[in-house]
Image (tube, rainbow, N blue to C red):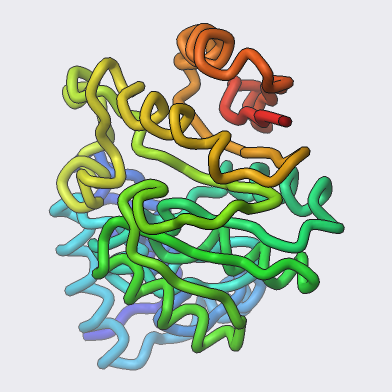
Length: 276
């Protein structure tokens, strides 16, 4: 027997909370399946759900109870006002990364060329392509499966960009006015404290890096100067405990760069710019 939307969410919340899982995932899948805004969900909260939607919701909650991310269940994730297709081949875009994109968009209004390195779903690169229409954006990833998802998002959003399969800069001989990247930065030894949904379902290739999470940063900074135009800049996201190690790395490997660190809205150090 079907339930009202309010009853369904209460039922899901009790189940998920008992399992130690954030019940917000249930609200997200319900709103996405129903194509509701938050206001519409409130408006319809006492309406009976169609039986097929109630059955689907029960199936979705069972998947949530297995720690599967809500975004993978419904196949889309929001980022900067757009819905991006996501699959387990790509990381789920995080709200914090919007701050990195806003920083780039604010400063690179005259850039002719830009590179989103390790693009995943394309959230960073496609958003910048929309916000910086004068910039020719290249989106690259080491994973062909990830790049296929980014291409689908570009087609759906009708954004023209260039795509290249590349392990860091290996297949990218060009120079760019700016490079933006969200590199793998989680140390394998941090696995025990990781969120189970991330650990079980998101691509490990995009999450983990050796040498205490710094290995890919070390490769990146070694090659970066050869891939920026004169006066170019690179923007990076990193783990909130990595600023001291990155300061040391940048000072040693890129003494010619002016380094700026920024904190996110939660006041954690999470972003850096290398200006050449």
